[in-house]
Length: 118
Image 1 (tube, rainbow, N blue to C red):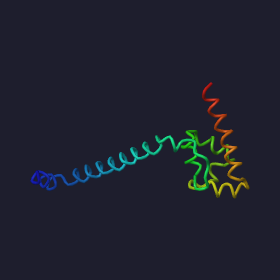
Image 2: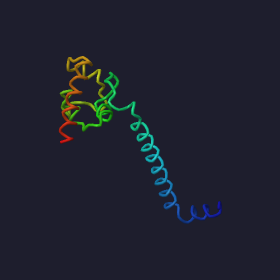
Image 3: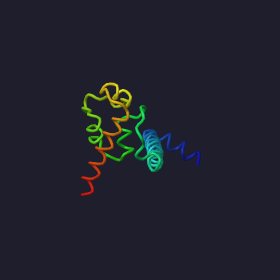
Image 4: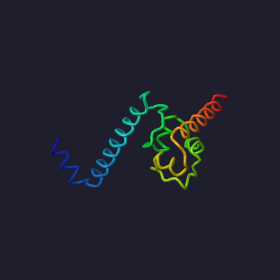
């Protein structure tokens, strides 16, 4: 087996390197996909109460709603909000408490889910 690998390396270096890169990338993305699927399939991660460390993207995934619903609930403008801005930072910027943000989110999510069910 080792002699075959040496033969491939001697005559087809570029093909072997490309193959190794492709296999490595497939492995990385495969592991990442499986870990994300396992994390979000846990019922404890769905519809979590808001906490300051969360980001709008995390909230959207937890409540299984499009980003626009979360942006509307928190009165965010898409270009103005950094991707990793925490809810604590948004609450401070908007002058809202976490309870007010939770109420706003619950109303927006309920409205979206109701319109989707029709």
